[in-house]
Structure formats: C-alpha cells, structure tokens
Length: 127
Image 1: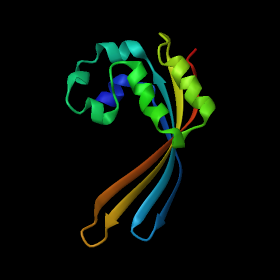
Image 2 (image 1 turned 180 degrees about the horizontal axis):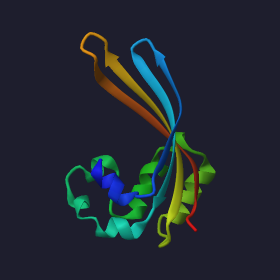
Image 3 (image 1 turned 135 degrees about the horizontal axis):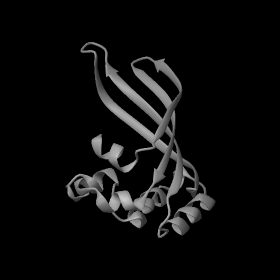
Image 4 (image 1 turned 120 degrees about the vertical axis):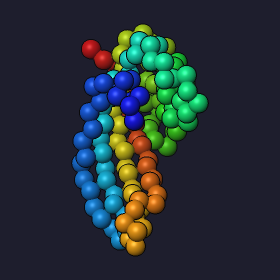
C-alpha cells in the first residue's frame, strides 16, 4: 500500500515466526510505527473513500480511537496512554504485534482468505 509508505516512512516490521498448518501459513510479526501528525495533514490521498475503512483518518484522535475501541488488543494502561497522546503535537511511537494467517486453496495455489489480529504492546512519545 503506497499510502502507508508516505504516512509511516520509518515503519519497521520483523517476522518473528512462521509455520504451516494444513492449508494455512501463520506468522507473528512485530512492528514499530511512528505516528507523525504533520504527515497526515499533508497527504492528499487521505481524501479517498477507503480511508475510513483502513483507519487512516487525518485526525490523530480518530486514528487512536480505532486502537482504543479494540480493548481486547491491549491493557487499560495502554488505552489511557493512547487517549493522552491522541491530541499531542509530537510524534508517537506505536509498537504492535500482528498475528497473520493466510488460508490457501491447495488446488488452485491461491490465497483465499487473510485473517489478522493485532495487539498494541507499547505506546510512547517519539524522541
């Protein structure tokens, strides 16, 4: 996705583990993202229709609310940190664990389903 590269130019992703179980490939991925509000203010692509679907709102408070609403993905303490950083002007570091499962159709050799579950593991002010 091109827009993610524009909004998160320093994104780091590391595949921690992968395994094949029957017709699924399962992976655990760790990510570090710096949320920089000035980038969201300048990217014209955020005016598109799919923006809300992807959670890439121009306003940080709306973006962070997406994480805060998924209470199963983090602790109460992280939820409070998200709320406190949602109106900050400075950059915010987000550390995320992503569990990804690709389901394959073995006869056609194609991916037929992509499932993902994220867990916010840490939030802090970018220095």
